[in-house]
Length: 205
Image (cartoon, rainbow, N blue to C red):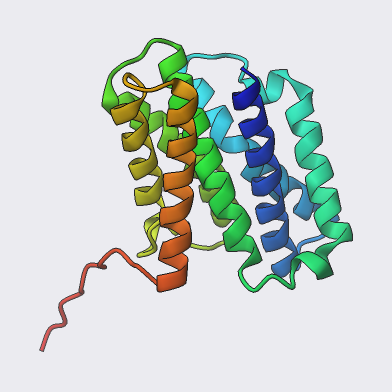
């Protein structure tokens, strides 16, 4: 489907830029920047495909995704100063990638005739956050999804909208809604500093 292919390329580029920007911020060398960009862009899809038995994973079987990620990372290195002028550059590109890959992951489950809501949500969530989790772990940061930020919840909300709509309207429109809802929730959470409550530690007196 042309729409899904377009989504995949947009998400791949956005996540590759996100990972590369963070790598440069952490003073990694060129190889480290490229590797972190590739990991952020491809890992979520690889994990999803392994979970649903699609072996070899699409991201590894089709080299164009690797090449697109590599080119996006190289472009980030070349134009880092311009990209870094965006106040929340990493978060912005990460939000785009989250929205796109949530839609792609949820659609992957639906396209295989899985109708269980939990499975569809899980595939959307794993595809959306998988690369970002590994990216943060590699640079020794607590992954966003484990912090108080609204990140995974945005992905879940997008998949829920898809589940509630795709049987009543066209799947294409539902995928757009999934992407847009995920992206809007994530962007608004960043703008208005919406957070999930953290567990308060009790101190002994």
